[in-house]
Image 1 (tube, rainbow, N blue to C red):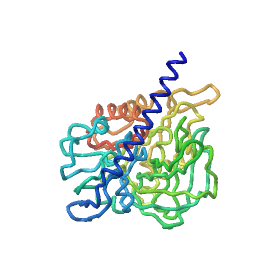
Image 2 (image 1 turned 180 degrees about the horizontal axis):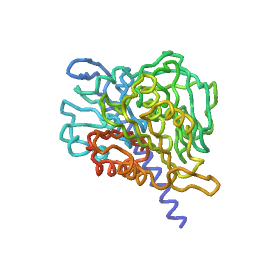
Image 3 (image 1 turned 135 degrees about the vertical axis):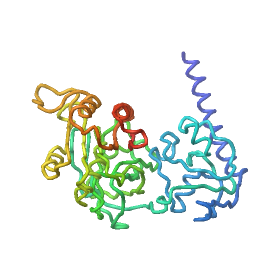
Image 4 (image 1 turned 90 degrees about the vertical axis):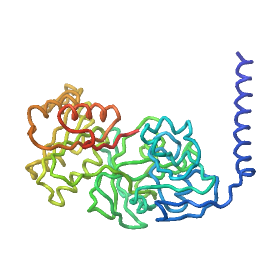
Length: 372
């Protein structure tokens, strides 16, 4: 047993040495010099030193591509369309790209190294994303595992965003985390609140950012944010909006609903289904129940899948998908056009998409923010 352990340590040590040598050789031998990045057919041209990942290179030039995993190649959010030949798709990219994306030469910018001149295409709105500096103004416990964090913006001191979009929080080194990390969180506040941003952040065991927020972040701490990003926002139609949220996925839905009410977009029917296990997992009930009284076409349906005896729960029970299916058949107008707005875990999203498509909503009319 000791011999096996010793051999493992030797192999591990050799692997670390080889990895370090590869990095050194790549930086010394593979001196790529100055290369050009053409963005959106000449909309912007950059001259940069080659060798670094495209994601990092662009951020150093003030162009921020969304990346929920901080550039580790696990979220698939940092996709860009590459218009020039940069070689085959890497094995690290394949699991996060579908066949259509591969045909269009969509690549993960965190995995593509800038080694020669490259032409790419990105959404125009990414030119507006920037770094914000702020101060933590308030931290509030919404539930036992969800904190509401309000950050007062300092530089710049105001932000423009669409309700439903997200920001990336920059997490500083702490404990055994030796480098800065970025993680994506949906904005919970309304766009009318320009001088500050609010987030609902749920504790994920072992999560780098959530652990920092729940254990170390304090009021008056300085924070950096990058954004805004995202295509999850209200579409400008007359269709009924069927919204489903789970856990901290309530954040972007709250932003959308509050924005609609403030701008008096109250001519649409809006159904908000909020799923949780037990009463201790629910929050912001008063906010939405009060809105229901003020907005005739807004319907709030909280549901518990595992209510406890002490909860004395009188509302809907069961899986949120079962409750959603029941309301489609018993409560909603069958003759109106409908759109779906979903935010929560991948499992919840996938299950809700099935219910919605089975009840007449085409898949391209279902918009979602799926947590990794």
